[in-house]
Length: 324
Image 1 (tube, rainbow, N blue to C red):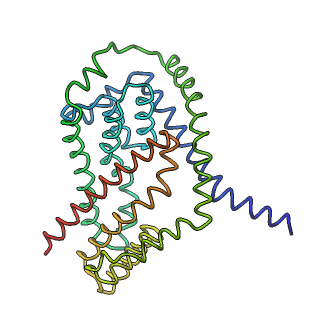
Image 2 (cartoon, helix red, strand yellow; image 1 turned 90 degrees about the vertical axis):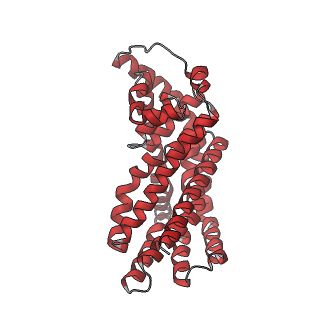
Image 3 (cartoon, rainbow, N blue to C red; image 1 turned 30 degrees about the vertical axis):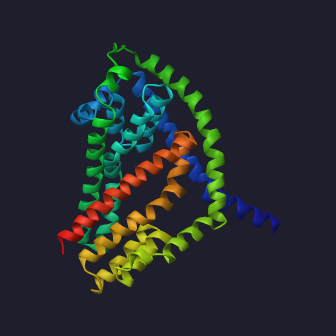
């Protein structure tokens, strides 16, 4: 009996804590290796070509451009590149904050297939409106950061910190040795930070702290009195459960004709904004704290989530006014 209970406990711990933690550390490790290899081979300038016009306009570095390109394929690798550059003094804190928000567009495209194929069967034609608006918000964030960095950084940023330098030719074997040496040094620090933070957040989740916070937010949506009660119920589900739960409810209400496309899209956008803080604390912080220092991770999350909420609110407001 005791043996069965112990086995059940260990199985639960593996599925709820061990496996997600191992998966996170695996992806961070891959990101470290890829980022280190790119840097060791001096490929950052070549990779930055994708975003060259915006990079030049925003007075951003080639490192930021390379991270932008990599973010289309791996957010972990992109953030690792930025973290490595910041730790080595090749990226200022101001540019790091801007670069992290600048990557909004590639980060959106990275998750676009999942979002699209999840929403299409449930809310049908409203999917294209919702995707279009959220894509517009992501594009607005990236362009907005390019404009903002143009004034905040200035051309002297590149001369001062990234002035002209010789591009060293590096052989693959030499790059591999450099990458491995940096990986060993970096992964130890990451594991020391990630393990306790992830375990603490797991404990808080098991204790029901996040559920209480979600229920509190869902029960205090008085600011949404302008929406119908059924719309508020969708938002409550998005906050108290997951985005997919709100989608299922939205699909059901759309199917029976209770809500139209406009109401569904506005409701999902509002729910997206309101559910972001909890998702950031619960999922994004443990991952960010493994790449950046915890204090810096908090700052990056606060800035990026605030900017994201602002852009989504703006496109939701424009859509509401346009569709009146």
